[in-house]
Length: 440
Image (cartoon, rainbow, N blue to C red; front, side):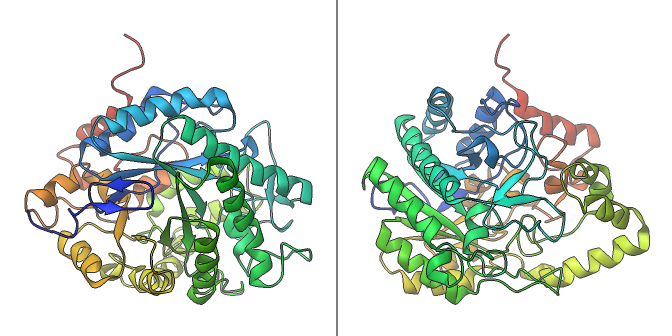
């Protein structure tokens, strides 16, 4: 078999994955408004299990209703959600694929607020500087409640028969808002020096271990370098990879089994998911954010006019860097963290879709596995292509990010029409997630 490193099993402390390719955390508004799950979510996850990935990391799964980033995302906020996640796991396991549930909380970063919780919680009371999502700083009681919500989410994932959980500590969500030197402005024991800013996530890890023991897989996704001033240059840069190395060393001590390396202090961010800023598609869907962010109308008008839109796009893509350097963008940071936490595996994300690049990264020791999102949306069978000796898909992901900007309003899928024989074929592929339906 080609790509021996890709197709060698990866053993963590408590689970073994058949190959080194993980489907990264990505999904759309496939569920019910109240956070109960739907058949479309099961169909979505099954696509990638059938395509050959070794493990799937679920999309953002809120541990508390106030932590949702969008309506229609399945949550794990109560025990009545366990049967749904058990069904998801069963569907994925049928294809010898592992399923890791991503425990998440959006904090202030919420694209569309829900009717029950119009205001976000955060480490800070400052709104986010790009969209203007407003929030209030968490009280100590709310911190304690949220730590417990993460632990209860892990317990429910275990009772559902899933293979592990991942803490979403990257890309600007709540854990990032505590970790980040650019966002966290607290004056209590959860703010200030790095050890204080890491207290929140360390308490979450410790609470999970107290709830589920040491024999259930637990990994952490972290933005190794935040680049918080990538677009708004007057902002602070945020955490460096050296900061993240120290956090990961603490998390290893606390019982984390793996680290998932990403970048960026927000989502989206020029470095994650690195690619184009598709203004045409953005103009169609960004209006959904206007009711949530006090700066979103300003941004919408900026995108609407050709000159200002192009200037913003140029700033975004300059911050991203050369488009031909997207694949493996985070490998340098991944290697630094891997060297610092020897003994636990490192998963790296970052536009991967070339077999040789992935195999070489693993062989060099830059990481132990990779996670992939957009290229797997473009080619659900990417892993099977690698197994057959195809090193790069004939019809690869273009990193156009049209999937990303459609997600607030439309079903998730590939929206790059040039990859399909017709627009009708593209729509058919996007809507295929709704089959089979939940009833005849």
